[in-house]
Image (cartoon, rainbow, N blue to C red; front, side):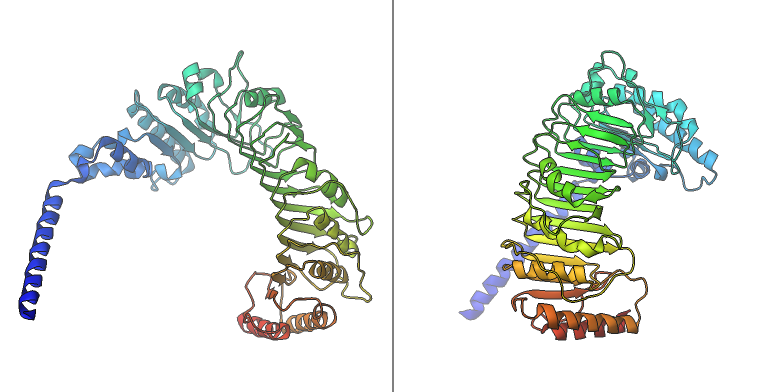
Length: 501
C-alpha cells in the first residue's frame, strides 16, 4: 500500500514538473524584449542616461531609433565623450550633442529637459533655441543648471527669454529650475499657473519681477531660492495656498512676507531679519541657521510667533545669553516635540548657559532635546557651589542628547537642572568636547571628570531606568552593556578609546 502511494506521488510530481518545464520553454521562445509596449519601452529608456539610451540601439535593429521616443532628455558632463580633454573642445562637443539630439526630437513630445553644464559664454548663443525647443516640445519640466564653479563677483548671467514662452507652454510647465540667470517679466505676463516646483539659484532679478511672478504661481508646492540677492524685501501679495516646502539659503534679503497656509517645511540659512509666513498651522519641520547673533529674548518671543505650530525645530546660531537666568514669556512652542539646538558661544556667554532652561519652559511638550555646544575660549571647569533655579517639570522629555560636553560649571548646571526636572527621561547621551588631538592624558582627565560629576551631582538624581551612553566627538558609541553601572560604562569607554583611536 505504501509503495503504491509513493509511486503515485512520484508519478504525479513528475508529470507536474514536466508540464512546468514545457510552459517555461514555450514562454522563453515566444516572448521577446523588443515586443514590449511602446509606453513600457519609453519608461525603460527614460531611466537610462542619454548616452546609454542611444547605445541600446545595438540590441536590435528595431531599437535603432527607439531612444528618440524617450520623453526625458538629460544632458550633463557624461553626455560628452570622455576622450574630449580640452575645455574648448569639450564645450563645443556638448553644444553640438545637445543641438543634434534636439533636432532629431523636433515635433515630438519631450516631457523633461535638463541641461547641467558649467557656465561658458559660448552657451549663451544657444539658450534661445533651447527654450524654443521647450515651447515646441510641450515640455513640463525644464532645468537650465549652468552655474559656474567660481561665481563670486560674476555679473555675466545669461538672460532667460521669457518672451519666447507662449500661453500653451506657460500653462504646460510644472517644474522649473534656473541657475546663474536673470530675467525681466514681459508686459502682461500671466505667470506659471500650473507650476509645482520652482528652484532658483544665483538668480539676478528685481524685487518687483520676482514678486509678480510668484504671485501668479498659485499652484506652487515647492520653492527654493539660493544665493539670490534682492537687497530688498520679498513680499508675495497673493496667497500661496498650496506651498508645502520653502527654502531660503544665503540670500541678501531684508524681509520676507508671504501667506502659505499649508506650509509644512521651512528651511532658512542667512542673516537674521523679519520673516512672516502668515498663518501656517501645518508647519511641522523648521531648520534655522542664523549667521548673525541671536538673543535668547528673540528666540523666546519672536520665533514662537513665526513658527506657532512647529513640531520639529533645529536652531543653529551664535547666542547672546546676557540676561537673567530665567525669562518668563507668554509665547509658547505649544506643539514642539523635538528641539535641536546648535549653540556657538564665546567665553563671555558660557557663564550663563543655565538661562537656556527658559527655552524648555517655552516648549512644555518637548520629548527629544539635543544640546550641541561649540564653545570658543578656554572652558572653566566645575567650581562650587553650582547655581540652581526653580524647577519646572518637563514631564514629556524622554531623550536628552548633549554634545560638546566638557564639564564646565554652566554645562553641569544645565544638565543637573534638566535631569532633575525630567521625570520621564529614558535616554541620556553625553558626547565629549570636539578636541582635535586626544591622547592617553586626555582620556585620563576625561575619565576623572566624569567620575567626579557622577559621584557629586548625578548619582542621586538619575533614575536607574535611564539608559546612559557616552560618545566621542566622532559619535562612535562607547561599548558598554545596558545593565552596567555608570562607572563601569565609563571604564569600558576609556578602554574602547584607548584601543581604537
